[in-house]
Image (cartoon, rainbow, N blue to C red; front, side):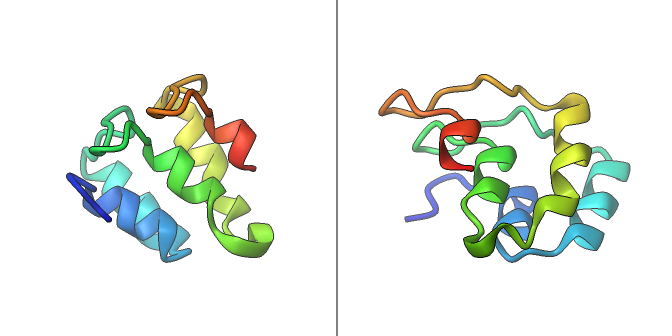
Length: 79
């Protein structure tokens, strides 16, 4: 189910803001889309219980806030 997911997306889904920060500092691109047209921000918003809210500001800094997946949903919809 992780078609073309990046390390940044996986760190977001795993709820690891320290890894997200490291990857972004090393040049990870938060604007990339996976095979389902989801961004790293979308992965962060999919984390149950919103325990990953700390990484959202990091992703908002350079990521596409209004990117839509294949069904037209944005990260804000998932949040």
